Picture (tube, rainbow, N blue to C red):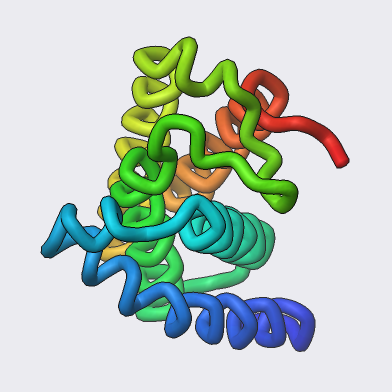
Length: 156
């Protein structure tokens, strides 16, 4: 049974997830929707998705069964969508993204692809009920997130 703080984080993450469902569906089905998004919309969407991933990863260790599957599914969808949300130059005052992202686009997208693979491993482990592999996948997701932020995000 998840702790009270874990349950609160999961509810908040679910709320953020609901807010992102429309955007995620649009990203999965229609590239023109992303092309029509303003820089502010792109930034807001990717910031919300990253916050959601952070909350889910912090609470994921205590999750089992369908909750673990749901968390891993959301994280995988976010990493699938991230490249499209980083249209060249999409920086606003609310963005932590540094211009070096687009200068090193190959490295940046390779990092996102590796994290997507980690999220796929997390989902597979959750579906299989393999707690050891699930916990390992969570750790495999956390480290690269921090490293990518060190390289490509400014600190407020």
